[in-house]
Length: 249
Length: 308
Ligand SMILES: Cc1cc2nc3c(=O)[nH]c(=O)nc-3n(C[C@H](O)[C@H](O)[C@H](O)COP(=O)(O)OP(=O)(O)OC[C@H]3O[C@@H](n4cnc5c(N)ncnc54)[C@H](O)[C@@H]3O)c2cc1C
Ligand SMILES: Nc1ncnc2c1ncn2[C@@H]1O[C@H](COP(=O)(O)O)[C@@H](O)[C@H]1O
Image 1 (tube, rainbow over the protein chains, first blue to last red):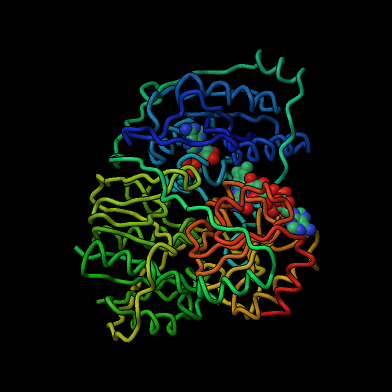
Image 2: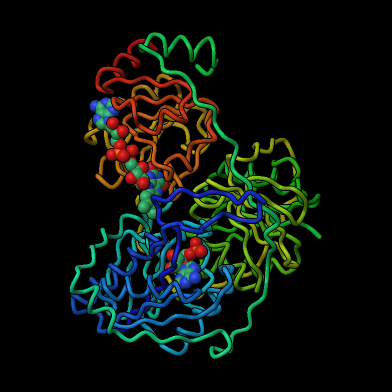
């Protein structure tokens, strides 16, 4: 079995986001970037399937400018076998990313595609579902457990109210939720080894994919600030404030 | 052109998130149709018909839609959807699962989790865990949108819209339902509760969450949690509040033993009043709390419960 994982370069989840003064976008200059945490979980799951002997090859794909090769290398250091960068300068909308990934999938013919449920920059939560539609494949979103079976994959999904188990025919697309696994750290020797693993670069043109703009970003503003409140000294004072000042109980 | 709204339901009752989505839709246009796709769900259709502002309910009652499998339901919605200017769903796990698939089938983008409607094609949505608000204009002929329920009032009921049957049976055979474990609770739904009390890693274990349940019951509220509490197995995943969990905005949010990471704040900082109980006075949660109590939760929470 061959597994494709999609990894996105995003702001590190600990980094602070600032909005540009002209409200055109957020300011990411000098911001620490990293592999999207949900994509890290996707890579980990693929590697575990390989270590268990269920998969033979893990391919990591990222769509973005040259800098996203860092995140592909990070996936290679975690244990992916080779990488593919789809070179674009734009911060692409999910449907365009899905169209590019769809062409990579047609070329690579993986049996399983694992992606994050959500990129923590745009918080879109769309690309996996869109890719499934474009390829007419089943989708197992928000996965907290994956079990490969003969010709099928069973996915336990985190849904409102609890958990749902679905059976999906292969090839299938899975998006990861937080409880799927706890990603490992890359060891120094593996980081060194990753530098020599193959990384191919393709473009929307070589893939033959035409991109279209679906929305226009008019402005980006900071959220409403909450003014800091007060410290109360006792439970009695807290109850008094909630009753008489805030009037919420 | 009319607007198609996807009803959230469990084949028995219409879920509250649908009503907030109807309010958002009414800010985009007039003619609102509500689609109930499910199995043995006539009761849901009847409830849907009572929602103010709805001009027509579409009922696709067929066993192939019983479990809201994305492969079947998205095909249904995309086939119906070509006749509409907008397709809206609540940003619930179902809406998030199905609607992007609909968008791709229609070759249009999706605008996720909107929190404000500026015009029929321009919307606001939080990005970067709510640390920035983007204003986006859709350029698509069919606008596919998920709606953050807490940002819109619930539509009222009392209407009697006509119900029209949809005879489309779409079965992909790509996916099959195996099983479901849904927690039953007498407490109000987390995302709609007026009071939410959430526990974090500081709760220590699963049994200690009964402390919070007792307070919740006195206040008629719901219980939530941080990711750390869910990851540790104290509570089930579906009560995680935050950027990648549930978004809540109750009148009163009480955070107990939660440090206040941005990913958690993203899910609760639009609450009207925030209370934080934490033994570390440096905890970032205090910077968003209206009332902070620096205390050991194992003393403060039982006292609170007793004195309420
Ligand atoms: C991709 C990603 C997505 C995430 N999504 C979410 C999300 O949706 N929701 C979410 O919540 N988090 C999310 N997180 C995790 C987030 O970054 C934090 O790790 C998490 O919120 C911490 O939970 P906590 O506050 O319970 O734990 P901690 O940060 O460990 O804080 C525990 C707090 O309890 C206090 N405490 C301990 N004992 C006591 C006591 N006896 N009395 C009083 N106080 C006590 C401590 O002082 C401390 O402040 C996400 C992280 C990532 C990377
Ligand atoms: N530019 C990209 N390159 C590679 N994968 C991506 C990209 N954008 C999104 N994805 C994948 O899609 C998932 C969901 O992203 P989104 O729909 O943007 O929230 C991510 O976790 C990735 O697995």
